Image (cartoon, rainbow over all chains, first blue to last red; front, side, top):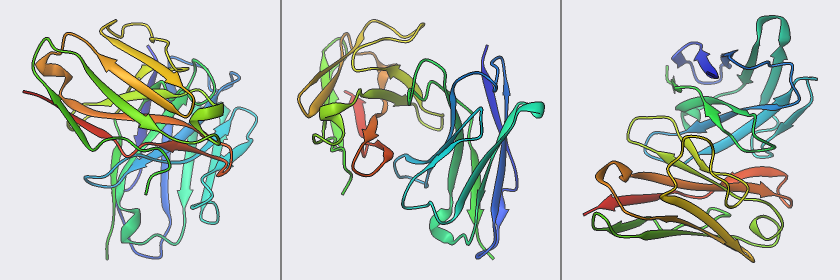
Length: 119
Length: 110
């Protein structure tokens, strides 16, 4: 059973950096797949943030690219998100997502973690 | 204005069939596969359909997907109360170099 679990601070100050980690179990993070972050502001739709491959290659949403870093740690079977210079507009539930069935299938999702940007 | 356009809401009675549309362009739906997700209240999204019309293991065959040109549709037959949820389409947009989600459609089972 594939499981993804997000962790990280639930509260980040404006202008600070949001940091989240996703631990993967039941699947190999070293396999030829992509691992993504998707977010959802309260009451709104889904927004893809970016993705990382097992080799460390990344693709980012152009609207967030200047502030986002996604990395993978194969030794710990986890991947991470850093979003810098956050504002209230970055308040959202953040999901880590796998694409194991194929490119961009977003087939397994973590439960999500709410990150609030507030002083 | 989302790149992928979905109706904000649809409704139908139990046991009826409902379709949810997703309209795009040649830079996204027209040249890329589309996926559909179901998000129950307070839950993470769940993959319903991938690569236009494929069902992941464990997903009910009451759900089906289709694509024609720059539009796609999700159909749900034999509606049940537990189908009340938000539904999202998603695909790659080659112009934006980005995975894009539709704005979402709220399904109400009357």
